[in-house]
Image (cartoon, rainbow, N blue to C red; front, side, top):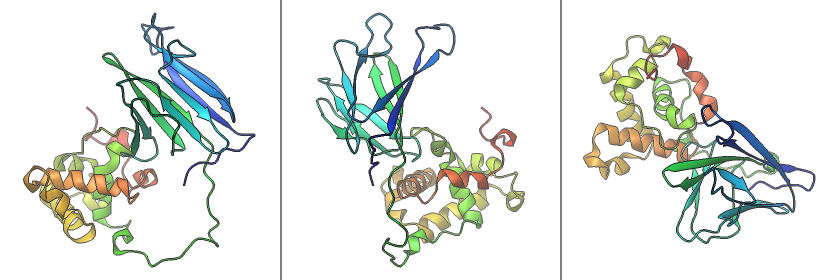
Length: 258
């Protein structure tokens, strides 16, 4: 369900301006857009940074009466819009595509510029939801019936963690990394590669319909099952950011220190 933007609400656009502090981390710029506003943007020929109102324009945001729209004015560049709350979920604004609806509440817009990637963040108001008393009740599928207190679910969360923390291109953890990541959980104090592999097999063969995906990925080796489990779980929201609380504090884990 797309976000509906009321007349008294705003869309917030933020980006990092490294030109002001080239030796540091830069400053965070911000623009608030009201319904009916349009923001054309380009790349500064002087600094190579994102610049509102630059000429020529390479794209535009428009806050319509109901949606945040995005246009790509370029002849050959594809822009990627990621859901910052949805792991690997993204949409593409292809060259010359106009008035594409951005369907995410918090989005990261990636714009290739030479050897760099320019990044913007867009915050829209929360979407309207149908009242629970009006929602259709259907029997839950077997796929959705994952036991969040189980060991296999903790393994699944550990596999999904890097992508849930904001990078759709993050590598899926190895089995050994999952062993290390879960060592702080009482149930996993004696975990090893064999026991983690058992849970991965159980998820792929008994709980989630990903076995056929793995079959066509790199001859079905174990890391293919891990990739398929992560892609499937994030695509259908079976593992969400809120589930990261099931894992030990990241600072205390050895798995992702480097």
